[in-house]
Image (cartoon, rainbow, N blue to C red; front, side):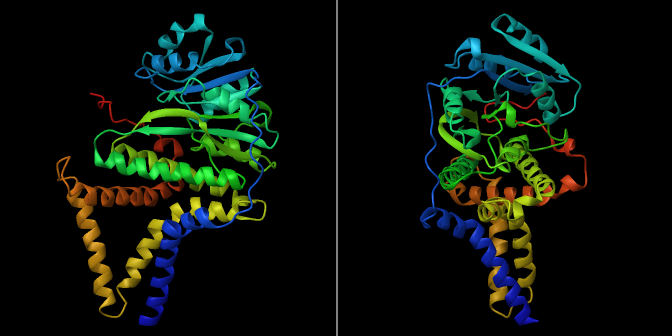
Length: 384
């Protein structure tokens, strides 16, 4: 029993270490064969439809539309389509205020973001579709950079770089660090060939490459671009196309993370070719994406097998796990500014992300639409 438990423990821990540290190191130092640089053409502009799906977005919509209309892009080539997904607040009337600026309102029955996008795509006239969300502010030159990248015939979709504006909370700094790693990894994979998903609030695709997706899709920012990827096109990150968002509280981040990973499960089921020979970046997909789904399960296997390890290894592993959980539990009791938060907050953040990954399996047990909840951000107060 000890021998079998040791093998299982070593294998599961080795995989955890590979996903957490081995793959990032491989991505950084291995001499990957790089594709040619993106042939951006800043002078090439084409008609663009901005697709903005909104559900009860009155708190952000006016600011967002002002951000879109401030884009440094020829106004005569820009169509702005607000898709109100059965909103019950002032979303529709706010959108109507901008009708004189060329903003169109399309009201559809409540059906979720992907259903709203499908309806918007059917109404779009632009040669390029620019997908964005209601909360994030766009840099004025954001759209120009995205369209310039699509001048490269090898590029089927391009996403911008989302900057998370963190406050003085340690948990926000921890999530900011995670997001900086994600952006770095996307930059590396863009140089190698392609990434696997866009940032939902800032990405663009040629209209001819966009096909409708199932209305219950949780990850439109993967589903639309992957259609182009499997037709031979690249999905890239352009760090010069910037959007800005406020950090979200850890509880809200749990819900957002769970929904994102549930969308990844959904993508795996609907795109099994991601694990096969048709995926020319399969190693990166498994290491960067599938690893996130596997991590909590591997951790549980390691912890379970540790119960049968010989002493003193068993006691050492269990004591380490108990110490980690204690640090995570202590974090919520400490005031902001406490020196201990530098240790307890990362532990709590990691635990929340692992829990979100475990709970993401619920996509197979409940309707995907039940996983959609409004994300609060740091500067926003909860609704009364």
